[in-house]
Image (cartoon, rainbow, N blue to C red; front, side):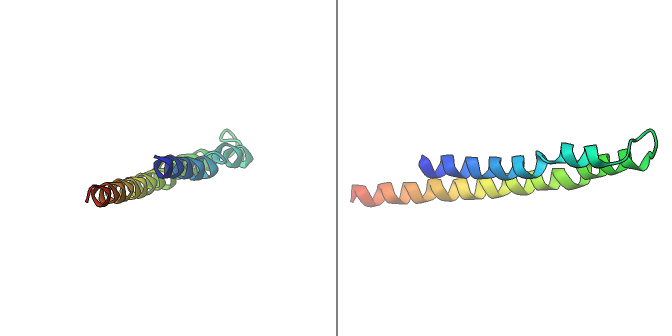
Length: 81
């Protein structure tokens, strides 16, 4: 259970660290009313950059969680013998 909790916190921490700074980055961009390309950059980052990151983080989490469960199940079988 602790390994699973640490894994969840690690994924959450990485996502907050990467996605959480995006509002600061977007605030540093020029005003979209002045330069419309700024709005395009925001949507490109959100649609093209963040979504694949979420998919990769989710896949990594699932693989690690399954490995943790398998290791725990293998440990339980060894204790029964």
